[in-house]
Amino acid sequence: MTQPPVLADDMALWSALRRHTQARIGLGRAGSALPTRHRLELQAAHAAARDAVHSPFDPDLIAAALTGVPTVRVRSAAPDRLTYLQRPDLGRRLHPTDRAHLPTGAWDVVFVIADGLSSRAVHEHAAAVVRATTAVLPPGTGVAPVVLAEQARVALGDDVAHAMGAASVVVLVGERPGMSAADSLGAYLTYGPKPGETTDAARNCLSNIRPPRGLTYETAALKLAALLRGARELGRSGVDLKDEADALPG
Image (cartoon, rainbow, N blue to C red; front, side, top):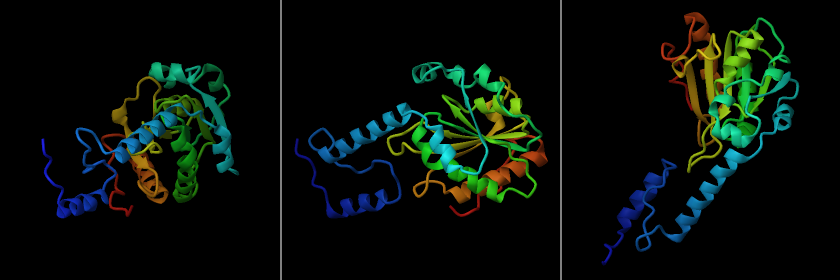
């Protein structure tokens, strides 16, 4: 079957649209398949996503980027990466030995840096988000030592905050890699977390923190600071807490 010719105007339109999205649009075709160049790009993106999921978490790298900031290291109940991927429930619970080593205090917030599904994301972005956020918190805010959590999912932060006595927890976690991004960091804020009881409806999420293609560190920090203030005033987080920083520039 003869294919219709690709007009110059069509090519210009697709080129213009591609400047505004990372989605794979208007790639054309070679027979019934993608052109070779785009097929290779897709395979490379898939390999990057797999690497992000399976690459080991390096807490030393994060601690070095947080020089001068107290840190503590914990593990989830998942003993290895394969178990972590197969048993999400274990990634939501602290290893019992590590719970006993957590410091306690009357802190306003604890930041938990969790590998999640992309160690690359936390290696590249998490420390910068912590520094940017603590810099814009009100004077006198009690910030607990940063917790570096291995084989961890978002709900592990509930366990950490409860054990440490923190009123709020911000979990910075590597998001599930997609075919457009393997380094996307998410931030999940929970006020008054209760292990095993708090649901996702009680959390506020900032997604796709990864400058320059996603949310900047500065914008994420201002949004998190506003959410922390709002949660403290409202007495809860989640669906009842609105992000008043939506109008902030990206």
